[in-house]
Length: 130
Image (cartoon, rainbow, N blue to C red; front, side, top):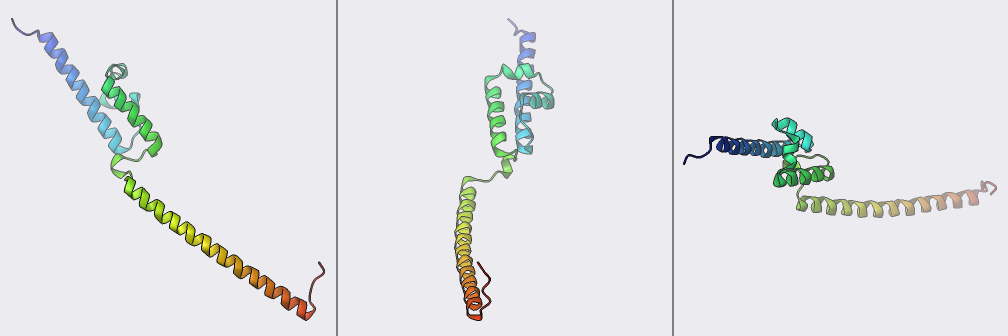
């Protein structure tokens, strides 16, 4: 018995469509483009309804769509790694501490300068009425 040529053609077409969808997902993610069912279907030239029938592809689209919103559409290759983000946070916290200390120092200097100015005005008799 010979294999059914129609079934073989349908299987090839199914695998080709899957390959197109997966390749399109990768390209859209790499480019930082919006990953939605419509964008994948349009870019790959396939049916949007077919995408919904493929659980693994549907899950990947939903995951990338959710990640894209959180990652502000930054392409995968350009996203900061966790160690990089931690280093940036540490640097920002150190800078914040430095600025807090500088602010306190400047406030003390200002208070001294205003106190000196008030003392000078009181000694010279130029004290304006309160």
